[in-house]
Image (tube, rainbow over all chains, first blue to last red; front, side, top):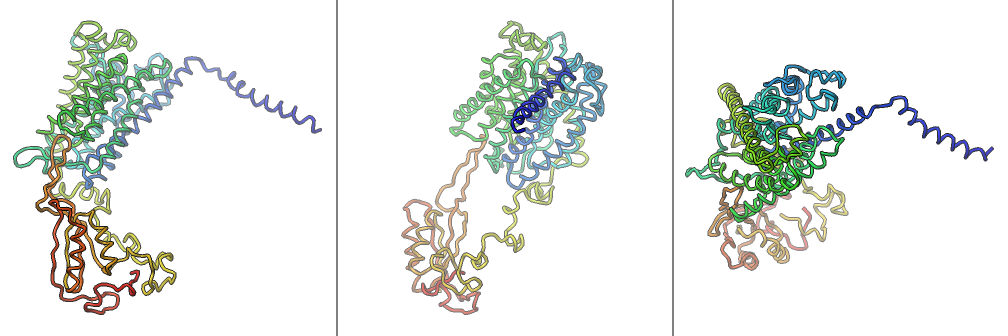
Length: 502
Length: 122
């Protein structure tokens, strides 16, 4: 009997091994289906990493804020992300990708993802002839919208009313961002070639995401004004140091990581391995951005400003975002290095007149403009062809056509977004008001807007937080270790307890 | 009875504390304070703008002793707090009217500083 056991086990193992093969034989997925699944997987992985960039923005902004405004940033990031999550699904995605019109899409409101991929092509021209799952496309584009929205607010820190976030977030994620992204990402007029120029090249959104966000910030800032005390009686800017450079650093590193999904995922597929090249291009530019910013701030100020080093990384990443799918490896460090120089010079210049606590106007705005224009210089023949948008840049073709398309795209995006955003913020200012009162600003947004502190122990004296929170034990008898005569410790001598005073 | 109030560099505290303890003066109160004097401030450079911080961190020591022991305490503080540079701080001596021990309610000079044999873990 026992001699048959090994044989039975071997048969059972063979049967188990055969099961998956049988299952496969029954389903027989086509190569197209498998490729589509693979692409969808990569796009979703990218989208999840891009979603995590919200944490990057949160830490970056909170680190650059004073401690009395540290908690407000969390409430803002979470509500903004959530408003965008609903509005983009309900309205935004349809305007951005639901049709091939010149101005906006018209189909796919409240997108119903139960439709199969063949059907999806009818609603979403980008998915015609296969491609990724429409839910993956929506989710990926939504997290981009959320990044763009997050960029708006860094500039407005420490003085804007919470209500302004909510109103502008709805307009921005339902209309402003989707329409602009349709023009450039979704088959609208800028991507098809405007004024007889080639199609505008913006691989992952130097203009679409970063410049648009910074433009909204600029409009808000003009109506909002500087933080109290930012400019002295002589009009000179004064430093208002953020409360945590370590948090800023953590934010920058999270954003840097997220950018591999941001740019790498914009291939919208994994099958040809292009995303790895895009990720490498992205990293080269970010690294050069840090070096460029570090050298520049040291040359101009004789100190290596911690926040500026972080801004350099962001600027390098923003600068390469448009070109990440269009330029060769060698061009990436050049674009990033220039972005790192631009961001520092930009922050120092903007600081003289405009109070931008995180440097978003420079890191996302100026670097976004530079990145979009640089693409018109550095785009290579083979990559313009591979992407099927526009043509080679000035340095390859000797023609200014693509550069012209990039400049026109930047101008159109800036003018439109600035006008609409200014109107929205103006309306907010005239109705509910854009800014907290001077007294509230001094107290800090945490206690004024949220009724609580981000760091309670720093602001509430411990004796007022109740007996349970009085900190280190004042009476050793309570620990049972301070004295052998528990309960009578106040009268006993305990050698070696020299720290006891009074 | 006199109260000695000394404003010194924070790093001078530990040796002062050690010597006072050894000399039989365990009772004192400290506070981390900020103040300005002849010592110049620190300039912070932040994102291209400057911020001059004129108030420097100092350590405030309060200690009440019997009048004839004042010089012993002040000499201990001087010995450790003096570096010879601007910013070493100042010592003030103030009169004290009454001293009462909270635990027992007893009052007078004997409540000021513990004798070694009576040292207790409060």
